[in-house]
Amino acid sequence: MGSLEVSKEVKFKEGEEACTLDGTVDCRGNPAIRARSGKWFAGIIILLNQGLATLAFFGVGVNLVLFLTRVLQQNNADAANNVSKWTGTVYIFSLVGAFLSDSYWGRYKTCAVFQVIFVIGLVSLSLSSYIFLVKPKDCGNEVSPCQSHSSLEIGLFYLSIYLVALGNGGYQPNIATFGADQFDEEDPKEGHSKVAFFSYFYLALNLGSLFSNTILGYFEDEGMWALGFWVSAGSASLALILFLGGTPRYRHFKPSGNPLSRFCQVIVAAMRKFRVEMPTSAEDLYEGSGKECSNNSIRRILHTDGFKFLDRAAFISSKDSDNQEQGFHNQWRLCPITQVEEVKCILRLIPIWLCTIIYSVVFTQMASLFVEQGAAMKTTVSNFRIPPASMSSFDILSVAAFIFIYRRVLDPLVGRIRKTDTKGLTELQRMGIGLIIAIIAMIAAGIVECYRLKYAQKDCTNCEGSSSLSIFWQVPQYAFIGASEVFMYVGQLEFFNAQTPDGLKSFGSALCMTSMSLGNYVSSVLVTMVMKISTEDHMPGWIPGNLNKGHLDRFYFLLATLTAIDLVVYVACAKWYKCIKMEDRENEYRV
Image 1 (cartoon, rainbow, N blue to C red):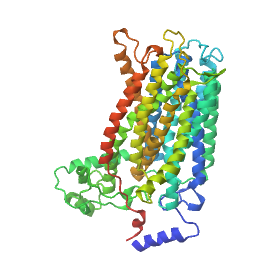
Image 2 (cartoon, one colour):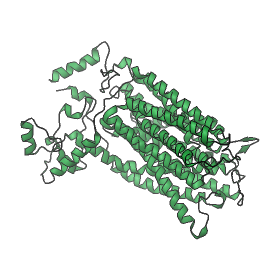
Image 3 (cartoon, rainbow, N blue to C red):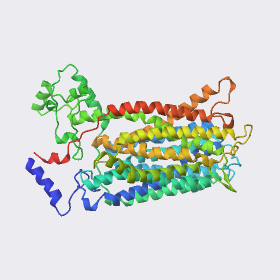
Image 4 (cartoon, rainbow, N blue to C red):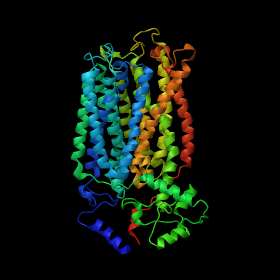
């Protein structure tokens, strides 16, 4: 049996057209041929698709808070909360996409279906804005208010933006993992490209939003909302066409079945053997057969010592032995050790994942309170007015700069200092650095707000541009956020992709997005609590409609304090964490 498997490997390596070793298949379901599929040809298509889709998404998201205040006439606190809830819902839908991808559809089909939904939502939003909402024409700029709207018109608007949320949310975690699938990590050269792909993916995401934050942001700020939304719809349509055009060159992993049932089987099996006396050696635990690994692309996970109670699920009791002799295997009584380790991996990831939520609270301020703060500052240079939302361009430029600095300067430098050929900083170390920079960003934002208030007109009626402090003083806080993203979010993408089992890779990417989701919801709850407490005794509160009468600086300093506390907890969790240990695929071909 072992010699047959070795000869199979020789055919793959010595044949005229070598196949990938990671178990990927082509669009016809045959083993993927290395020279004809995947690698940077498919990777670049996916990066371009991500850039165009991001342009479309941020064409809606970056100025949504201003659309709600100017077109739908909501106050600042309500608009900030609605944006946070909408953005959070985008990332909640990522769990739906990841579940369908890992369990049933596969990543390619999931990406295609949700991109279609994304396009439908954007077209619906463009039509509803053009026909119903932006009335009179070109209203919704700094000086021209829009007319009131009926409940039906507002309902159609929310239906449209939540279709956008569903489409983008289901697509995002899968496109990142699908791009990484194009590189065979069993090949040293392609494995290095796979690590690099995550940095370029995040760079493509930010460059795609650069056009939205500048050109589209300017047109929307001037009241041309329908035009901005139509451009977004066109960009999303082009992204879909490009994605479908690359179909013959993609590599695919087969879906591995419902992960929820595998998770529950381990819990139930362990509880059934609650009173069983466990052996001291892990060698006595059930290894399982190849069929029980769902498909040939899933590697076995080596046994680890943590969560020992779950090992009971892999203990072969006398009843299990009798069942095996009769050719019967009850998966709710006996699970292979790889399946048990899958559950352990997820349980170990949860504390790290929880520690990333506070960072997402900081990150989400760029789309809400940073914009409102910028709108209350001096936004003119000569006769040109700078849209407040376009200041996030400095975040994008910072991301691009720090990706280059990290990959070309910092990472090699750390490697030389440590005198090792391996990568420099680990993903966990980079995420910790991201938290530190996020604290600095919030302190910078609070200091800028203190000075903005110092030069503000307290009793203005229309308070946009009411402070003489230039909006360019916001550049440091945006730059610090951009730098923190390179360490936190790129590190997070790499970490969750590397530390999740083979059958749960999309779920790993969805964890990143879900932390952003909960960050948005926590931000919404935090704003509500702060406003409720700070408005007692008829006080205007920290974040009133007129920011000149509030104390937004205190809210920023509160976030800095919460992030510092989170950093301490994160360091403790990172020290406790144990990395996943996979069996080398080469070993699977040996006797």
